[in-house]
Every structure is written in C-alpha cells, then in structure tokens.
Image 1 (cartoon, rainbow, N blue to C red):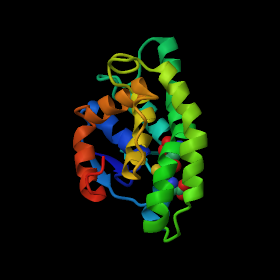
Image 2: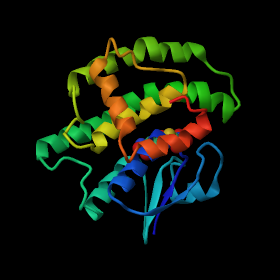
Image 3: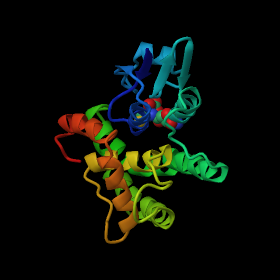
Image 4: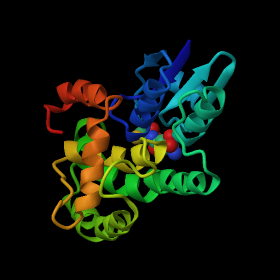
Amino acid sequence: MIKLYGANASPFVRKVMVVLDIKQLSYEHIPSMPFSGDKELARVSPLRKVPALVDGDLNIADSKVICRYLESAYPEVPVYPADRQQRARADWFEEYGGTAVAESAAGIFFHRFMRPNVMKQPVDEEAVDKIINKNLPPILDYLESQVPAEGFIFGDLTVADLALASPFVNAGYAQYTIDAAKWPKFSALVERVKAHSAMAPLLKAEAAMFGGSN
Ligand SMILES: N[C@@H](CCC(=O)N[C@@H](CS)C(=O)NCC(=O)O)C(=O)O
C-alpha cells in the first residue's frame, strides 16, 4: 500500500492527499512533523520536508514530484489537463503555488502558528504585515487575472487549483482572509476548492486541530 509521510496541515501534504482521494488510491498516512528531528522522515525525505511517498520499492519526496508520479502511475482519473499547452499552464500554476504563493500565504501561518507553537519563537508581526500588505497583493492581482469566475481553472479540479488554493487554507488558520471585494474571482475559486468533495473532509479533520477557524 502507498505510504504518505507528512503533517496534516501542510499545504503540500494536503495537495497530495486530495490527489490520492480523487484517484481513489488507498494509502497509509504516516504523521511526520518537519522541524522535529523525526528520523523516519529524514530517511524517506532527505531534505526533511513533507510530503514524502513510498509506493512499493519507490521512495520519492516533494509534492510536485509525487503528483507527477501519481498521474503517470495511476492515470485513470487525471488531475492535470490533457492538452499540452494547458498542461504547461497547470505546471506553471503548480510551480507558482509552491513558491511565491506558499511563501506568502502559508508564510502567514508559519509566522503566526508554527513559530510560536512548534518552534517556540515569538511571532514576528512585522514580517506578517509585510506579507499581507506588500507581498500578497501583487500575487493576488495576478491570480485574479488568471482564474475563471465559475468552475475550476481547467474545468474539473486539477493540481493547479490545489496548489494555488491550499496555502490560503493555512492563511485562514492564521486569521487571514482574501478580500473578496478586491479579488472576487480568486477568493471564490479558493472557496470552491475548499468545498470540493475530496478536500472538504480533510478540512473538517483539520478544523478539529485549528478550532474550526477555516
Ligand atoms: N517543494 C516541496 C516543499 C515542501 C515543504 O516546504 N514542506 C514544508 C512543510 S509545509 C516542510 O516540510 N518544511 C520543513 C523544512 O523546511 O525544513 C513540496 O512541494 O513538497
């Protein structure tokens, strides 16, 4: 059986969990906390980041690598668009979601939740303010120009929607909400991703950990 290593609330782990669910693949979730010196995690993930995945003899890490592997090994229910150009655009959104978007949106969660609770460091509200007021607005302006008013980016839910929306789930746990008056299309897309049948049960389980704040 597939083994997925990772902490529940990681935006990258959540993305892989949704993909596994959409593809109807059963798996064993092995809770692994980054930043904790977890030796088992270091064994399956040399960068000590989550997620990592084991499927038979295969051991890989990184959500992008994992999602690509799952798509090629289990193609029956696709999670990337088939058209070559759309696929390239989805790859770009996945890359952007895992870099600029995650650094800013999930960064709010890192500063407000992980630092005080896991790393026992004080919250750096100056850093949070910079993310919210300087870094995020141009990112949201760009995303607003890219996403549809209805449905998902490529019709059905793909990894592109997940990669862009998942970091904002974490931002929500850290009291950040996208201003729907300024960014109506993107904020609505995030809500649709959160309501998707493969995502909603995960968020319900997470809500128990975060006091139902999302
Ligand atoms: N590019 C990686 C990023 C994974 C990542 O940064 N995960 C975070 C948790 S959300 C982590 O494990 N951080 C631990 C660290 O940086 O040491 C992916 O897509 O899986």
